[in-house]
Length: 113
Length: 113
Image (cartoon, rainbow over all chains, first blue to last red; front, side, top):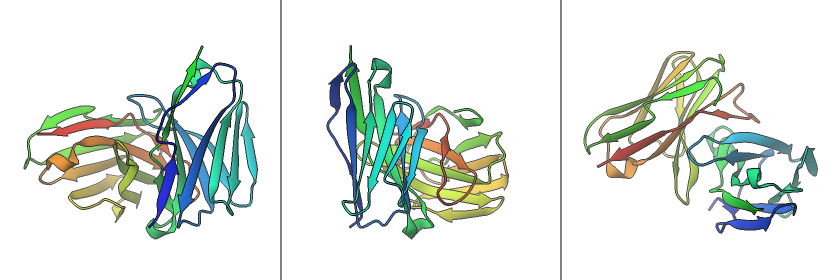
């Protein structure tokens, strides 16, 4: 069956450290993968998109890697801040539904000062 | 949430009653989507629209219908609400159908008693 797996347990880290979140998928062949941030009571907000032919993408303190062999994406936040505390969702295109996005359940990140 | 509003933001209803949720955008985007978000499941696509009067089913469309009579409005209807439809519903918009970043509304929390 098709699955997208993100760490179900919250990730707690100290301010200033690098946070690394994982997104693993099974039985998908995505052409691209996206990461979103969601704060409590609000809709997700787009952060980064990485395509299958790209190994790495950066935006300010954010870095995303995409390994189609391992079927995995890693999302890094360097020099993390308490304001980075949120739920982070990965999403990929699903050919079964016209390449519409399918989302993982998300990982909660808590950055402590 | 810029350019996307959802109404109502909160609703409590009883089993068997009809419910309509409204999504309104001011961005003139062609694509509009309805998702539901439940703990442990992430966002799941209910229906989407690729133009006025053009809609299609998503992953969890049973029990839901949609309509889009104007570019800016996308309605989600639960003909006869059930307790399993208690959820948070998000509308999203996008400029293209594939490889598309999506912009989400603030969500509607629906409780079916």
